[in-house]
Length: 389
Ligand SMILES: Nc1ncnc2c1ncn2[C@@H]1O[C@H](COP(=O)(O)OP(=O)(O)OP(=O)(O)O)[C@@H](O)[C@H]1O
Ligand SMILES: [Mg+2]
Image (cartoon, rainbow, N blue to C red; front, side, top):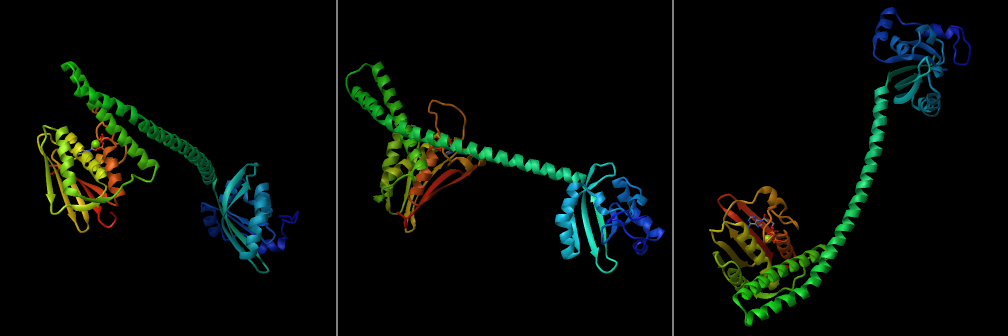
């Protein structure tokens, strides 16, 4: 082939890199990758059939042509800025992406390996395969990544907004619950005074209802206040004092018996009772656990409260018979506003009881555990270590 430019070679050079033996050529033509050999100036000396097919040339058209002519403008720039300097330094490059140009002009994305053989007859072997799918895949991957990044950013913003809203709602709950206490107290006191005065049977019935509803509302409000204190502050505050655990729980159970007159409530104190704790909070803890045992346990079986003080701390365990608590309820029931049932009832619960029980135990440096199994019933145990109380 005549030499027409700097990429063309002299005939004497062609001879040393003439066509391989026909059997070898046949093998090279069949490999599923484009193969090219160029001289030190980038003039093509050999090309296999796959290369010709992919780029739309006859072999005879490629031999003697400058390698650069087979690249798009972008491919040439990339070759000059990246591939040529790398070849200069390390004699080979592997798996670089490059755009070659089909005879009819369209770009052909390829992945290229080059090995340079220095010396007086320096030459380079090029092997490439078409990477159209890979190119497409990479573009899609990039688009997907951008999309994902924007979704994550949106989600972050949405969460921050939701958090702000939740915080505001919790603050509102705190303020409203706090401010409801006084008018409620007035209503309760008024009803209490009227109940002690003269009234008809009908009026007594209504006053009794007002007192009971007021008591329910009072409990709800104080739980909501504890909830906001635990969530927005640094947990529930406790004032630890010396007290007798058995005596405290005995008194609490006495009150609870009046709230559940038809139910059996058994106290099992073990050993001596002196310990240190916040008496009101422990009473609240016992009240919540017994309330739950009465509400969710077998109504025919007694509820048992076991209290025990030891050198390492004290324990209060509340047991009820009945069906086991399902695992999915157990997993979440200590979270605030989680109820095991969606059933609506007159004494609709809000799912704060166990959250507050856990916060009270935590404020004492302790914890609450639950064991619930078919046939053995359910036991909630609050364990408070003595070191921290
Ligand atoms: N002893 C128990 N036996 C069976 N299920 C229980 C028991 N104690 C609690 N649960 C389940 O755990 C859920 C959460 O209890 P929690 O005391 O926190 O809320 P609640 O009783 O629904 O409402 P609240 O106590 O605020 O009035 C209950 O709704 C119930 O499904
Ligand atoms: Mg409860």
